[in-house]
Length: 187
Image: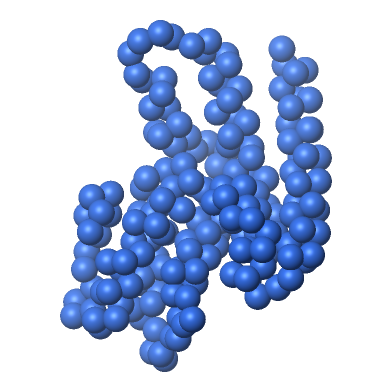
């Protein structure tokens, strides 16, 4: 079990299949959620949420033909849901502050502040995309999958992926443009 999730409680007498899924995929789910939320605590919450949902299901869930793909997508969706549900106006992840706490050459504090604000705005903007657009965007730009791989994972065509990503980028450009313009007016 990865050390990052060692504090999670075990489900009492979990089915062997669920335990095997956890052992095999927990690290990837955690890393995926962390890349989206930029918070180890939130990534652990996402991991726990996914496996608790699976453990509580009354019916049998068939994750075939690719359980890893299903769980990876579940991690993306759960992390985006977490971002959507949180009022992030007053929230700053300690993981974002960690570079500032390291001793050594002190970078420009104003540049660091602008970089943190931009990263927070990007996460907010991605969270506001529709569920399908947000998932595709994360798979492409956070996880590094190509359009063909995304199409296979999501059961669609490469053309649909390309069009969806184009629209998502246009939306983000518009939102981030407003954010960047507002930031320049402050200076």
